[in-house]
Length: 424
Image 1 (cartoon, one colour):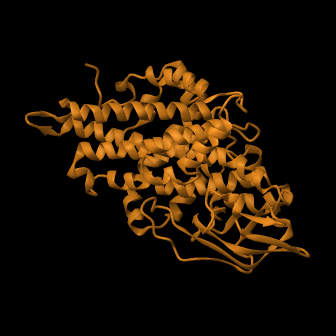
Image 2 (cartoon, one colour):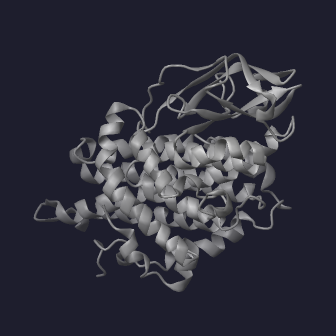
């Protein structure tokens, strides 16, 4: 693996302002890059084969303070922002996107969402244990017949005295088999509400692990609620406020999923560049052939463009800052990049890339989910078409974000970020 922390400080001031606005962000990247190389990389292939989460390693993320990366420090979190969350997901995905997906489901879909729509009593019961990783969390939104159409979900919650009775099924739930507590959306009198449901609630169960094509370092199952008894104090906010909770958190989810794609792309690009320089055919390195140069150059350009857009948007997303246009645009543009660059890398490497000697086949399988999870590409196209036409509802337009971000990408010499490329 390359070590981005070594080239990080070679960036110009404008580049540093985008990718690491503060010294704290730079230190975070160095810490996560080191953890990824030394702890995540060695186990990635093993747990992809096992198709389950490395729970012991996951709890080490708690020791590093990463499980509460966006939670205020006075509540036990790291007190950082969306840029920090993007950094963490980008770096972890360079080795094991599946493991990173479990991290995202816990830290973004549960912890971040829970904190910003909970009260002090609820935080007292749950927050400490999810910040350490003692309890693994997840979110229950998708249903067997309702994915993107969340308004059509059929899971219901009916108040009976001091309890709610939940009935329904959630599917494709990351961390389902290992999770202890879940943030679950259900309908109360036809409106979406948000509940904390944990393993102590009678009537809750999970299905067997659902096998999947990629992201196998995290596991997935159904959440099943059969007259499930949830204490009334486990309602988050008011009845009917679930849609607000969901939409606010989707922006951060989409940004971190986009960052996972750029992390995959960066790793695949690094592998491709090194292989292109070392592999000799017809008496010269294959990176001297135009076809190979096209794969490398286009991969580099699309990776940098995606990173710049993701980081630009991340600087304008927060608990009190809505940026649906930006987050949809970032994921729509960045999500296919990981898959495309992984495919280019495999084409450069030929049979070697197709075999498990290199992680490309795993990264290519992993990358596909990012075009589906957290909103399909089609849903982002719909959102941008509906919300993104003039007059824009947000102070930033997609065009203005690109105009600010892309010059930064263009100013990065290839040999600065990828030392294996040397200037001619």
